[in-house]
Amino acid sequence: MTDTCSSLIVNGLHGRLAGPFDLGIEGGECVALSGPSGVGKSLLLRMIADLEPARGRVELDGVDRDRMPAPAFRRQVTYVAADAGWWADIVADHMAYPERARALLPELGLADALFEAPVATLSTGQRQRLALVRAISQHPRFLLLDEPTSALDPEATARVEALLARLREQGTGLLVVTHDAAQAVRIATRRLRVTPGGLEDETP
Ligand SMILES: Nc1ncnc2c1ncn2[C@@H]1O[C@H](COP(=O)(O)OP(=O)(O)OP(=O)(O)O)[C@@H](O)[C@H]1O
Image 1 (cartoon, rainbow, N blue to C red):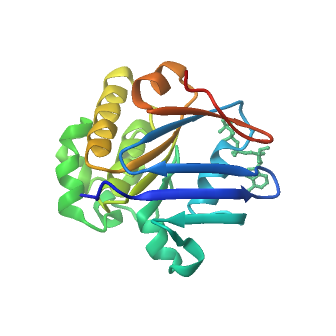
Image 2: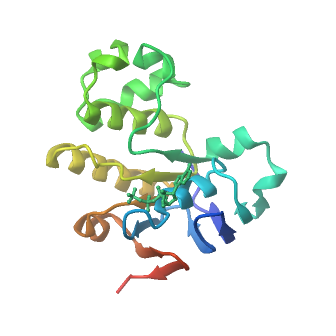
């Protein structure tokens, strides 16, 4: 799916409300981010994904993101919000790669029929998993996940965590915001705390 030598480097990244942040992630790593509500975790992910104005540097595989077309960068470094946006009526109409997306549904415990369902009829947890399907089916090198299991029951949470482990094995790099310390221990190779002044290593 992705190669194993991707790297994402963040240097002095800051916005009006958060940072500066310095961080390096490689393909196959999972970095968990924790920190108090409102400290800037979502802003950090959105600044890295080029969805929020920011100063500082972001490099993908040694290339400054300013030297890449923004859509190409965002396809490779993809942000998934806890409550992602939907713009069409039917789930399938959001999928750039419908066959790949459909094939992921059973792994996340989602019925095949949901693919053709109106978004308005879905539960919050179904939408959250489908947003993950939408992102993963584009085969990003790095996934920036904002509380990816916040609306899920324990079984669905376990399915998402298993999927994330599989993606890591295939070389995808993951940066995951979670308020669940036990989840951070389960999924992450490194744990960082977001503070008003930057990132602190919490890995034992
Ligand atoms: N579009 C915006 N306009 C103004 N302020 C914003 C905007 N987005 C975020 N903020 C502010 O920036 C700060 C950081 O927000 P952010 O959503 O990154 O926090 P967070 O750490 O992800 O919190 P939570 O854990 O509650 O999701 C907050 O004080 C928030 O109110």
